[in-house]
Length: 214
Figure 1 (cartoon, rainbow, N blue to C red):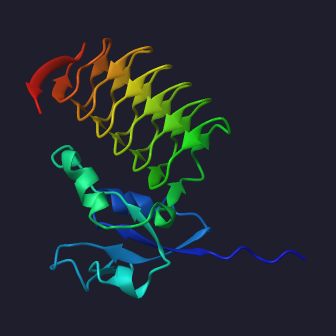
Figure 2 (figure 1 turned 60 degrees about the horizontal axis):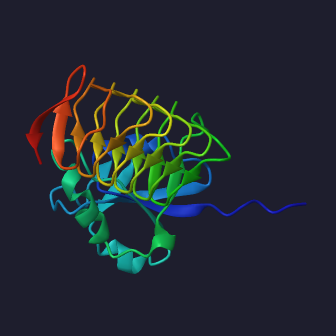
Figure 3 (figure 1 turned 90 degrees about the horizontal axis):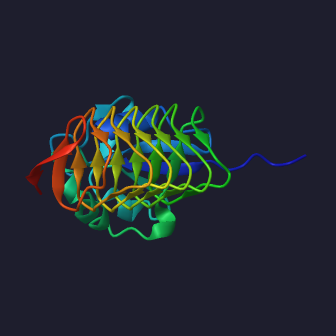
């Protein structure tokens, strides 16, 4: 008789909205121990049945895996620095994929990736490290999403799109096929992107237009 596969222990960092959504994505492959947060007012408190720890817990549990999901429209540009400040080796980062998402066997998924319920990632799509994809978004074939990106809910990214590192794509947005979005760019909620966007801008609307510089 085959032995049961051992569950991997997991911390989620920080205790924020993405972390709350991650709870529902964790499968039986993982056992959530608790959250990690730098806010002293959150530490030592039970949240949703789990304790919130300081970063010191990483020393006590050197083998536990980490899911790091900082970032919002206001703070997404700091995601890279915040995640790298944990000084975690790549093999310690988890990949959490909701069981009710659909991921092609031909897609490539990086580490420290969170893919929520209803998301679809189709053939030959490449999802970089440290990416969050919120519920019901569709990433079509041959899309390349760069590291540290945040993809909102109900986003549709058509084929052969390349999204640069550290972008934020607002919920309800649609991105036409065969275009590029430069790194650090924010696409506002509900936008329709029908032409390539340069790096380091804010764009919003139908069609999406530049409204500012990052």
